[in-house]
Length: 81
Length: 422
Image 1 (cartoon, rainbow over the protein chains, first blue to last red):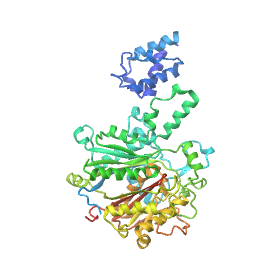
Image 2: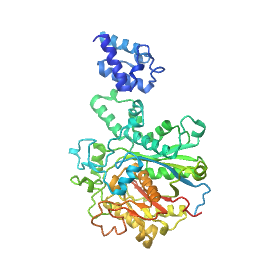
Image 3: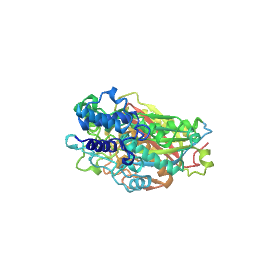
Image 4: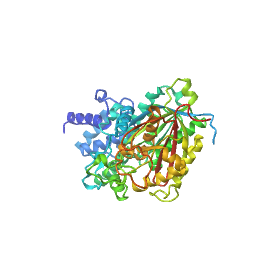
């Protein structure tokens, strides 16, 4: 899967699963501060990512995700690995 | 008789229910004798014995909630937010952005079962996809206090909030308990009501197993027939209603429109059976008697009763006996009684609040709404049930009965403003 495709799908998930405003989503956007995603929302997002990309994201790796870019990087790495 | 220095009045109403998505359209439909019952669309009912219910059609939670909020709430909480938004608007009250005033406003909200849609979704996910895939919002969506909790969040109600879960008496308890908080001087304003949204295959199957539901599937609009000889069980409904309760002087000082006074609240337990009422109606009668005493009224003062009237064999017979005990035979023979469940279906935990709303509107307009489908009177139900057509009459004092599985009996009395004795 191309990186651009992953980014697009990721944005789609943020809109469909978390009800976020697409205009606010960019690579540097921080989940908590910029997108107002709370701790339950992060769990929802991770579950949606695992489903969408068929990857497993352990809790310890998920804990450090703060921005959209970091989350996309993680998915890219998982798919490559 | 108890003396209350602080009297409680109703200054706002809101609802979404099978008859309408606001107060006036719902009341117009009830007055006209419209049935809200139809074939179930919430799920494919081909496997359940009962295939009919009174659903809330065309409800769009996005009229009241952001998409982001709506998807975190079960349907029953969405209903309650809608009803409460309307009721606060109706009362002309808004505490958002006013933390000082908000501290003096609370909420008591009844629910029978809570977020059953979310519970079933979560359970399906667990069975089909495993424990790790269960949505993290499942618990907060399903707990029966979330209507109260989310109302406080959405409308900035920072006073006491609580949830009553006495099955089909839940939201009558909510209104009574909220009124008590105002009487005691804890707060001046309370949001009170109830909500239910359990038209799911599991709940219909379970109520079918307990033989409680009508299976008159071929005639949906004729299925809920309280006090009629041909009744064969209740019809499940869904929806919410909210009443804004306010200390009378507080309401007068701000020139609020006063619909009615909450003048009496009575409660009792049958201490008898998990589903069946105590035969003879002595338990239900004690709740009505307590409400009369609380209001300082005699049985003969009650002009209208919005009955629990579920359309089950046991309830309607027992409630009829109980009304005779509580009001006395003579007064019982003269009182206008109706069951609006004949039109709305049974909202379970939301029923008490919706029927309190109907009682308040009956006082306001001098109209007793009808009991529809009353074609063939049951000899054991021999009072005046306002059959099929609304009745224009003076209503100074209206009683609303609600009884729940477990044997919980609640009676509320509403009085026209200024018509309650001191």
